[in-house]
Length: 143
Image (tube, rainbow, N blue to C red; front, side, top):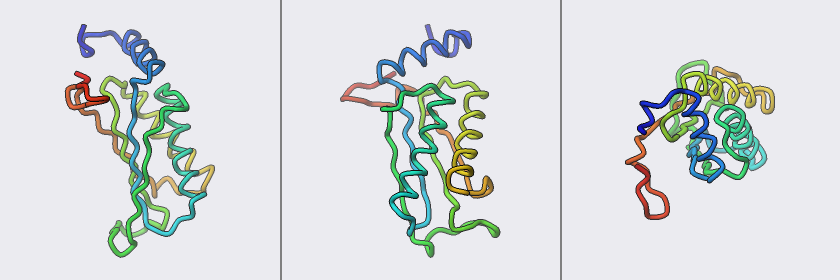
């Protein structure tokens, strides 16, 4: 059965089953201005991961995260953004509901604000959902 033909409860169940098998792989890329401490960067990744666990039902060990630090002179932002401005790019398997994505965005942003004092206006999040045929893991195409 194709994912688009499935009912929401079946999609949620499938995502949970895949997650337990280690087949749900959110790829996280955070772009931020260079100069933050190792502790700050680790906390950023933890805030994101906690939001993904709560909203997308991923497992704690399912971490494929990276931070890309950019020289401040090479990172232009709109007026009013602070030194904490970041772009968070999440690449996920297709099939999440609009509500799950909304929850992920809200939880990640809230976690960053409560834990590190990062203003919500300094957090941009984009989710990419390439079709399964565009994923390769362990030398095998997923779709």
